[in-house]
Length: 246
Image (cartoon, rainbow, N blue to C red; front, side):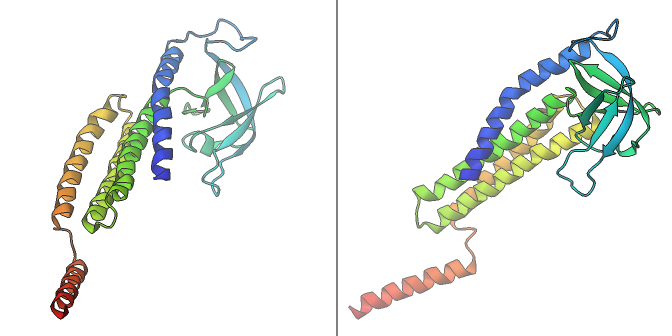
């Protein structure tokens, strides 16, 4: 239950971030090009040439984000991180020339000599989709897992109710996983934001229908295995024997 509550809280936080991420992405896409080099953080877009001083893709440390140190012609260095290794940072090498897109005082995108572009961890593009997909996954799993965790507490000692609760929890995992897979498909195919709920919604309904069917089956005893039947028979036989002896 603790895991369910934590995931639920994370889902609520992500849901509240969707609107802000949308507004930030829209601001970025509507930002004009800077007329001259910005002397302070600005909402306009400026392309600046950098030299790569060092790069670390953290291939062996998959939990670490790829990072690079970029150097201006003046000698000032900028440290940037990337959400993934491809397509640009994985091909970077010290001494390479790249062009960084600066927005609000941060390098939000890097372009290499071959014209390939990659967003840095500061880039606003794609954040609304990530937050929406994460919110759907965490909220659906957290809420259903919480119900499945609380159910046995209100029906202690009832084996069929315990099985029904387990069915609920596993379907929560399935619904949350479907949201993650939908987010991956959306990102891989560059679908619009509305594609996430449009695809996940029917999948969630199918999982919910399956959950209800299996819960009813568990409560009816259709999911009882032979061991349960043998245990019930033995208990009944012992009770009958005791009654006869008396």
